[in-house]
Image (cartoon, rainbow, N blue to C red; front, top):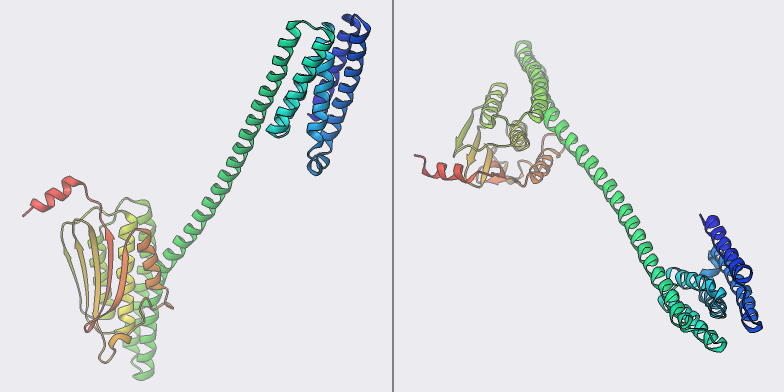
Length: 398
């Protein structure tokens, strides 16, 4: 493109020379000399500018070269343009000098180049007796070059800003994709823990119990019963995996029913008393909220079996107008106190309740686990969004 641009400038300059000296030659010695000198000087300035364009490092090192070369070109072409009627086409070169100065240099330099060209037109015109059309018309053409160059510079700035905005948008899109990827990895990690670690943790407890029975009493029958329960836990783990996948593909899950089923399974597998109570007006919970609360309950039950074996467990689910609250509590073993288990820990290396906390925070909820009097209580709270009509109906219901 730079080569094409330079060729176009040279072609225009050659055409101007033909028109100025061949088609409409100057009349008189003085105009001819001014036109010849001005044409030669303008040609040298045009060639010098094309050289500077190809040596951008020189322009950066000596920024004053551009306005000097363009100013000299404007003065030479302006004087030649005012010499005679045939030389009037030289004002095109002055126009080009002002345009390039406005688009490639600073505003001060562009104004200086334009003023030099206009002054050359006026001085040469007055000295050679040019008409009013030359004295008044050609400065307007030069000023038009200045305005055109300023518009060109403005468009260039807009194009650069648009390119920068596009690059920033692509960078932000890449960051969003990376954040989505990291969030998806975290979600998969939570699902792996929630679905598999629950079953594997309960399975580990059963296997430890079977080993203890065989080691301490040698009761093969009781050990076989325990291993049968472990086998059922494995089958239920596979079912739970399918249920988790189903939860991601359906709108809602019956949370109360799932919690009741978790209570029954826990009581059956560990041989302890477990209760479940629901209160308030149930709200329609999304699958993410439902699964999050179910996983909290399962994690708390496994922790209860690990750290407080044989102790009674109570599960509570309460709905009000603003939030749903899940509580899982169990009696602490005698003498355990507040050190029964670390806050936020789990049977799986300490990541259980931590993962639950992260899951609830993603849904705008909170999780608290700690001793309360003689019990260990896990409390999960999540906001509930109810339509106004549903809230009014719930408040007026008997």
